[in-house]
Length: 236
Image (cartoon, rainbow, N blue to C red):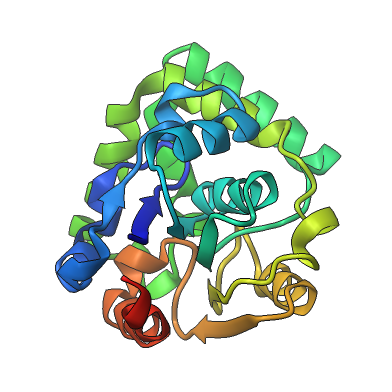
């Protein structure tokens, strides 16, 4: 039977998916993977996911989680029956972002993770959500819970990520792409690029939303996911 696997973003945990888990139909036997916490490269994360979840898969990733999903479909295209890619980028790391990550890694290693993460809040959320103290604290709590070691390892995994654009044209399963219209970390042009490369892609821009779609606009994300998942009902 086909299984739905949710893949968190960098240093994220199941909390980021809590609004989705409340509405996803039981027939999908949804699981939230933690491969990003156990492996040091995007390629290894994808292999670990394939090993841990046998059979056919529907993948739903957020940010780095979508990068893992795109690598899974490269490694095992016959097993991936659908992908939902939220707030992501198919491109390899740029030199400018690499330098920023290296600086952040130095701060993580020196015990200044909270300082870096708090400074990142305006980039992660739409302006209307960045002032939501409860939402922001929930976000900061799970990032800080991940700890400096995970923040360093996962940033390094992103720094060495493959260029997913080289294989996306061969993806033949249905693909849903969602992006916040105000996403500063993976801007809308990245989502449009992915949608243009994948033959069976559908693109949804989420209004008044930044990078953390599942937390910022859960109702809109849920509605889009549930409509898209209806096509898989006969197979599960």
